[in-house]
Amino acid sequence: MKQLTGFTPIAALPESTAKGAKQRLLETIEWLDDEDAAGTTNLKLLTAIVESILWSEESYNRFLQCGFDAAIELFDNSSQNWGFEQVTLSPHNPRNWDRYKRLEKTPHQ
Image (cartoon, rainbow, N blue to C red):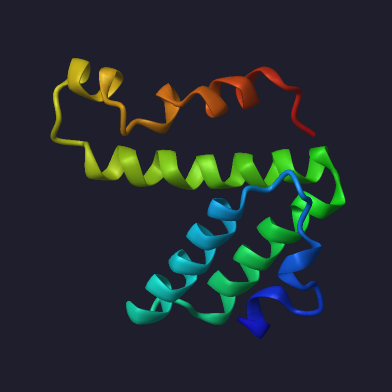
């Protein structure tokens, strides 16, 4: 856990962050570790995402965009044998998520 937070204690997250979200993040880290996927790079990326919440909305949006790009690539690879309508209507398609649609409308740098 110290590798993830560095010098930023979890208590420093904004109060608007739901306690459930913090718990899900911790569970995700534990899952990555159990799957031997919690390498240095993954932990640094998670740290950057957590800390981006503290920096600015612009930083946070850039990290969200990066995450959505990865999610879209993963979805596209895993659904390449699906039919067109099944892909476009799937609730698992990140392009259908409300947060992605809102992020798409904000200008990127």
